[in-house]
Image 1 (cartoon, rainbow, N blue to C red):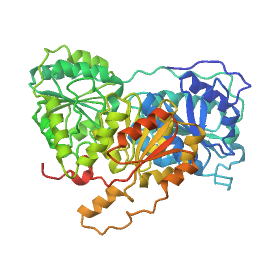
Image 2: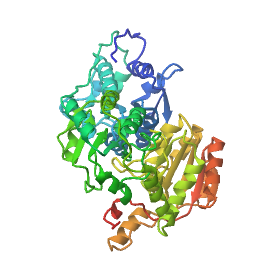
Image 3: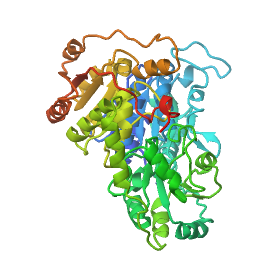
Image 4: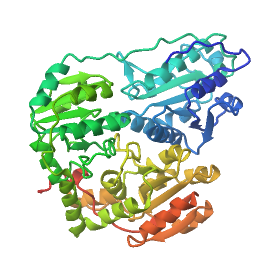
Length: 548
């Protein structure tokens, strides 16, 4: 990448940063103006990155994360000092744990008024604001990408560095804190160059691994969120090796063009059995975390190979020392395709079909799969779906037919309730977006209904009102706990929608598909209310220990 450009002294530091983002084709950032960060709003112009105003700082980061998940470009949030910055941490944690490339740029207390030895009690002042973000930020050589600066030159240099490093695989989140008075200072006349970096690669085991693939009778592929940019390459490799494609939650849609793509998750017994049958598993861009592996209780093949730019964690989780440390998945797929082609060792489509048929016939699960089917039949594959931590979201996020990568956003990185609606704001600046959420999660961000209407964002909200925290209610039931704290008072949703001038429909499972079609077709903000109590799917942890 690298920058080396003259900067007009008339521009402020804030303006120079917006210009820098624009050169990266980052069209929009998200934030809230405050007395300390007004320099960013003062610098807005037609040829610079725009800032969409939201109603809570947490939403700014959720929206930046959502924008990244559908575009693959760096997501950017702009916030103000102290409480404004602190408000972002829940969303920052979700983005960080999900390896989303997100940059939070915050003002800090004016440097000219600070005392280096102690806080003086300035408005919003806190000592070491970047330390809030350090535990979650991406690390380079052990150092977190959470940086506070004190002068204009350092601000520009740090912005260049963070924009570059956060977009390198494995991607992650970073923080840049700039004193309020520095944001308004003239930008330096010369921006120092950051040299292009070449990710370290360790391909020492490539020949040995290729030989193992040659000898294996039953090869399988596991694709994670780190593989979403390489769907076509993995599709071709799967076809060549006759390999089924398992995906993590973040990897849904990777390889979906292949007949070998598994539409059902590995949490279903038929899919788990298929995984246990293979001889060699190739893991691309997945950490093999607890939620995707039932806390590592899945029976993995004896041979597991990790292909990842940061293979330490997935190798530990898979108990393997066989890995290729690289982000160049295209090259690796080309090398693996040099082995003699193999035939499919099972009818993978038939297995997935059997799972779906069983779910449709189950008294407990048929409503959940009916919800999935209604969305599959009515919401365009071209448009993204954002799911919340809700029973409805668990069904749609994991079992939905997401036939391309980056279509589905699902917050089981950190597991943040209230993710879907604010994150969808970032996606809806690009295309119509469907939000699938429960009544508990929607309440986290009701103020953002005003953002959606003000920005005229084409968001369809599918609200499943089950009277409270349905998943927690189920948890309490199976653990034989009293049902406490999970039943919620809810507003009159129709009147709420009317007050924000949203379109409104109440639907049943029988006519839901038509309601969703109408919502998508309108290209306007709208809310669909579905009152159903759904049984959780097997992808949720309380059901992991069930007998097949």
